[in-house]
Length: 76
Image 1 (tube, rainbow, N blue to C red):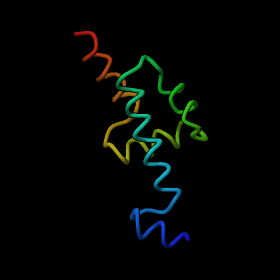
Image 2: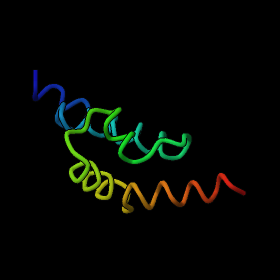
Image 3: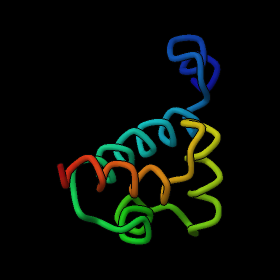
Image 4: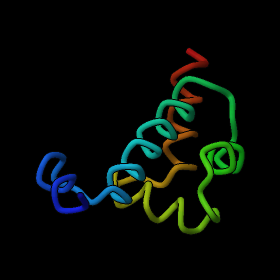
């Protein structure tokens, strides 16, 4: 079952779920006024440093910087 999942999706189930959660985190930070702390908590990440590290690895920017850049865009 595990290897079948990886063959179909190209990721382990854990990696796949984390990628979905990170995508949702990016949406929350872009489209809402939620803080980074609220987003990681809502999406069930265990702790803020782990969430920040995963987000930065996936998107090349920290969640707080991503949040700040999008807040600037929403103010225009």
